[in-house]
Length: 334
Length: 258
Image 1: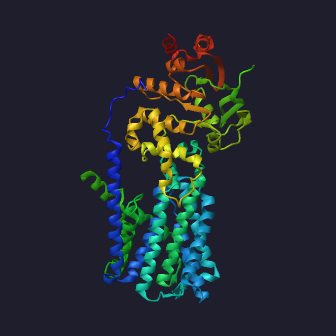
Image 2: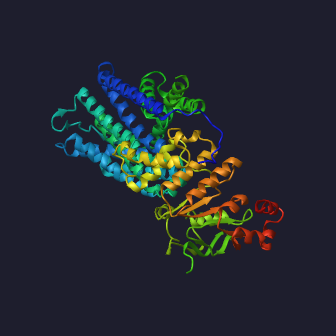
Image 3: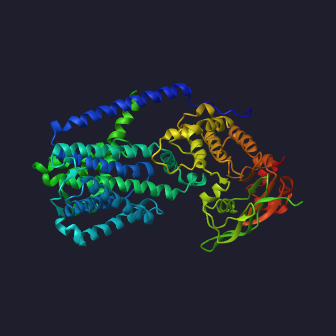
């Protein structure tokens, strides 16, 4: 090419160096995750297991939500519906059929959320931005009122005393420690599914769609169908989180289906850092920790105010969230 | 033997709330040509372009591509048939590497775009081809750069490489040199000329010097209708065209034709 005379721009590193750096980063990441896994294994020795399980369930919920918002660019305001559906279906089945394995109960709840996700998605996916958010909110409110009225949900009381049952007929989940390791395994599976989705051939196309939708269309991709898949995966994993939560607390209630819950998961994700891998986990940890510590103390009635202040501060001062902010610092200093 | 038309419109019309932006346009693009669509501001060039690429639906009229009507198809469907468009604002995927930009275009033919359970590594088989495409537009050394860091001219080159990765039969280029300085314009002219080998190109272009250098055939639009058609010499000599451009751009024609 002889007529290429563009002024030189920022120095370009040779591909060799770039690859080596990427590999080194990969290794560091692996060690980091192993360390986290180690901490998770010993954590119940130091911290109340029920609290840790709550944290893991909400972390999975936020991660599933982040897949949609951070990687597909879709803001759903109706994720409570999936969280609650998983919980109610699992709770109902485990209460009604005492011989049912807990794993099957959770699986059924998860599948129900997947189906509901497909339905919501088909209705909402053609709209964008605020319209998309509003349609998901409206549909979730519809689901909320179904749960208020339907005979199997226990109305205002919810489903209480859901038996935890046995895992594969082998492990008694009434033991908190056993249940903790089961919940940890569920979280890791859900987290791994999200990781794989992000780093898959599909993930590449999803990223392209988020970056420039018209361009992705002009490359021949059916954008709506790809978004729909992201929505269904997100709804499925949200259902998994809700089902697991019901087993942990032996409770499925209207709180899970209320739009507050949809708002809360948005808060967790934004606080931790949308579009980052660990952001939702950190965000969920912060919110859940604050809620449980504050509600037991003298500030109990102020929980929502305090969370609100933290949220506003976060949005105003570091929009990239906690993890996004840490990553930025790390990038600048290394 | 009559020439073969790869892309045709018949009575193509687009109205926006009573305003007729495109008025019964019969456009015929001959296979192998570089065909330009020019006209003063507001002539409906971009609307025609968006109709052809299916980003807008026509009010009436027909679009025929390779002998078959494509009027009712979705934009992603016509891309699969080999009719691929570019955009006025350089349309690249900013937070992906330069190589990944091209690879995501190559990926479509693998048909694995819904495979969320597979590793990204399954795409590495495409890397070599992607790098080859980058080499052709002089971007090989930037392969691992984050696209958002590229200068404007290079983004356009990348966009073209991405488009060519689909191996389209017809390229629709929307003002490929818009917002560029002299050297970049030269570069894009070179790129388009090379990309047009064995293909048909239809471009909307403001820069008449680019049109005069590149195009085999020119259609002039004014007020949504075709005003004149022919090669550069005949079109620029046409008094109707000169009148349409009078004031704002008459001088430009003179200059470019000289």
